[in-house]
Length: 107
Image 1: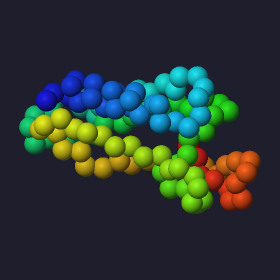
Image 2: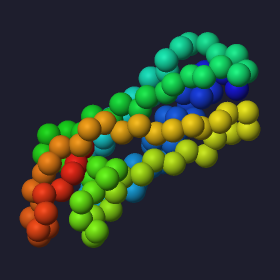
Image 3: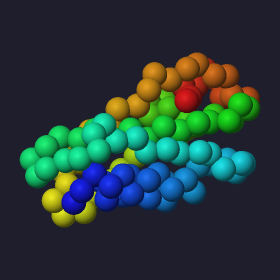
């Protein structure tokens, strides 16, 4: 699989994950960025999904302090020949949500 196919796979995964958001609202732009334009078998290539959350919206962080909050998860089913290694999330920010006793962690 070439880097272009990997980029398409990552972009599709991001688009498919979109309905999992608990709140509806405007479309959330997602851009896939590939570390290198080429790769050979055995190479490691990092792909970043850049998600711009519009002002006024939030997404739960991957680690939440409240047992009733649903953490953000990203899972990717990779095609044959691609090994998925890890997901790294950005730092979350504290956010007070009405109805929650604890300050929540959001992106």
